[in-house]
Image 1 (cartoon, helix red, strand yellow):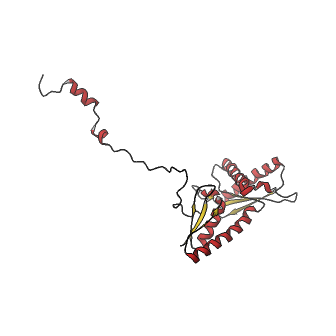
Image 2: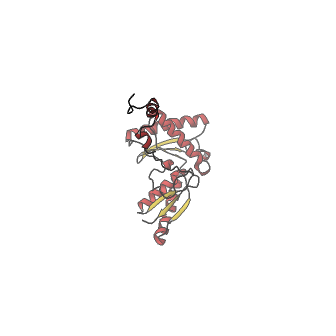
Image 3: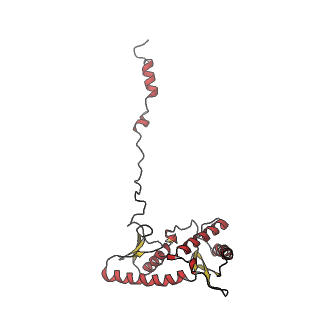
Length: 223
């Protein structure tokens, strides 16, 4: 046997040793996880679809494609059928109004000639209304195959609350302009935060949502 030929032990070591690529390949870096389970307080910009959550919330994540008027009319029809059946099953009074508000269907349960809409369909802090809205969106999604962003109102609750929130936003805007300091508002639902965000944006200022539910709130900032 030649002195220059490898021994059988050396051949075994060559077969089992890692290649240069395996030995030197870097480990893929991973981003740190959010350990507190909430969203960062200072990094979320004002959202026009906050709840959706956007409700939306809102977050509210926008749909992949913009729904056209025909799609929104279809959403309203499906929602109206679902809600009418629900009212019949529960033996509750109420009529259904369907409209289009910007880029989403708007459906409302209103008082009828037979009687008033039970206010318990709104619930404390509109929790029942929010749940009913989510059920209606799911019914629309099941029928159309597309995620719905429709807004549901009961007995004019959201309309009245919207008017109140516009005044709250105007007061905060005036305070920020006068003092130049950020102003934090009370915790709000995704619908309520969106109303404030829209009002602040129209006034030329900046707003952010901070905190986690149920303490999530709007902060109004100087421009």
